[in-house]
Structures are given as C-alpha cells and as structure tokens.
Amino acid sequence: MNLFSFNPSHPLPTHSLQTIDAHTLKQWLDQQAAVLVDVREPNEYATGHIPGAILVPLSRFDSRKIPQSPNLKIVLYCRSGQRSAMAAQKLLHQGYQDVAHLGSGIGAWAKAGYPIQA
Image 1: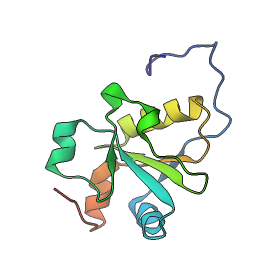
Image 2: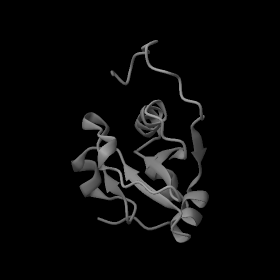
Image 3: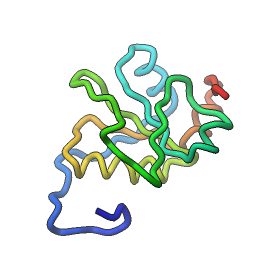
Image 4: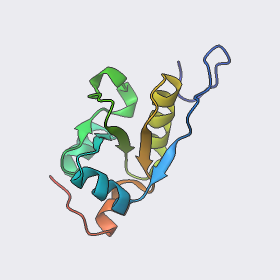
C-alpha cells in the first residue's frame, strides 16, 4: 500500500493517532513504557538521535522490525513530525493500537533539553 494514497479496500484504523510532546515521551521512556522508533534516514540518525531509538526509515518502512509487546506503546519520531505521522498511520492501518508520534519531532526533544546521542 502506498503511504500517500487511500485505498478503500483497506479498513480504516479503529484507533486515532496520538500526538505527544517531548515531556510525555521522556516520562514513557523513563517508565520503560514505550518502544521508540526513528523513521528518518540512516544519515539523519547518524548525526544524532534520541537514546534508545530503533532506526526504521520511512523510505523502507517495515513494521516487522519494531519490537512488539502488549504492555508497550510504540512511539515514532522524525525531524518535524510529518514522516512519523505517516508511519504511525501505516501501523494503525495494519491493526496496531497503542501508537503515538512525537509532535514537532526530534527538534522538540532537543528544545526541551533532553539528550541527543550521536
């Protein structure tokens, strides 16, 4: 399925996408309540990423690369929040339920004063 088109043969997600801020993400990570996924490209990830993030680029997004646990939320992020929203919608269309993305992306994380790992 193309991420940029609607296909009526695919069911619409039953859960809506949750947009979170950096403080909420930090709480979830501190509580070990989330799997964090960076959907940027490898060169972007290499210049700096949120510690503990798994790289699954949107350009070759494969949900099978995301560790799953019924007790963990899946949180996606990118540079600005656009690519992570697209990837999150893809997960919702595949039936994932507890999916969120970091609004304003890694910039919001850095602006909040949280660490970036190189």
